[in-house]
Length: 537
Image 1 (cartoon, rainbow, N blue to C red):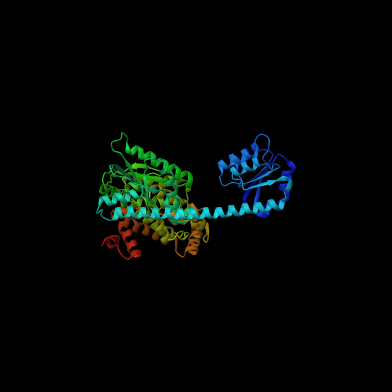
Image 2: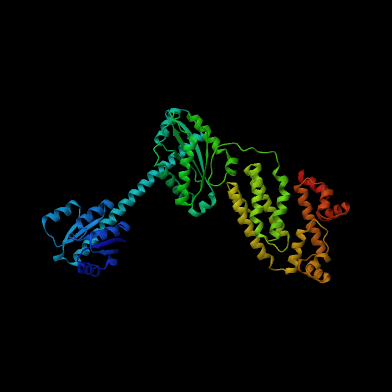
């Protein structure tokens, strides 16, 4: 809907026109009626009209001056002069200002003005269609150029550079002039890519938005870092500079990347981190540096959100991550069973700091976390008052898509909050609360001897009544349930630790190792040592 502004110091004329013409019928909005050019200009600076109908002779600012000043701000403004003057001078001035029509008040007919408004609207519609088409064509040109740039950078990484001169010539076609220049390569990574993609609905929309913002920021610099998209998640930047200049290229690049970070955060609510490579002087150097940046998976995984860092190797120890598996599994299981949401953040943060301290390989970390969560799923299901709360394939897919430790930390916090909330709801459904509490008590005291009388006292129940109630609700006796839970825990310790059988026996509250082995064999079909041998063979 186009906006119309009426300006005339003759108030009856303003009132007559505002009421005589049915603006909405013409898909027009009467933006305002003003009694002189100065007031109209003040309001136009807040909201510019598409069509101006104005008198000429007015106090403070006449109509010709108003037209001139508004045209400076909006060259395609449609203008009609409404005046008592039919002298040649005024008509001549109107022509100079490219006024579309000159209407005399004495002979004014609202129908004539309506016809003029329809002409204005038709010309504005046509102009808008032309501009839209031009924008579409420009978008296609820009899009094709970005695709060609991506193909160029992919060839650089994946294929040998047969002729450095040809490579430099092609680089120049993308506004990257490197003759006689040094070059600093940079890798940009979208932080929290999964959530960013969900917000923008698709990879293409996200990439288009990021490319536009980066292009706008880069265009402001005389010596700029040329941007090459590498898929939707990553970008390369090549920053040419004169090595003879007294400047620190790393500081200069960091400042440029900071500008891009700020713009992405401001306009798209997206965070991007950057790794800066080594100074290059030849195309082959650039190729090697880009390959090295893409291979810096460990540094990328452990970077904080919105980081800007030089490429560096992270020292990795010889510690076996899975030797800490049992401790992590126990802590997380107890956290869930206690339904203590207050310790989720510190517990997760503690383990994330541990992972970062030792800089384990990202893929090994994901495998470790996935196994922890899948084992927790089975443990929760083995406690009869829990049902499955998440699908294995979804769990696997989501963890594999996580790109950084900080993203993994946020994901785990949300995951455990969801699990505990669902566990609380499920735990109170289907079974008597006394049985739920008994199962909970057992899971937290597997390292001790647990008797039926002890748990009945804990629940303030008669032991005979509790025994019958438990069998009725679960289908097994309380002692059978305790034994089954202890043997399940024994299997975990045999799988996940190197503890001898005697130590595991003590850890589960058994005084007699022979008795423990006998019970284990009755339930598992093999002795503890045979069970461990099956897993390693």
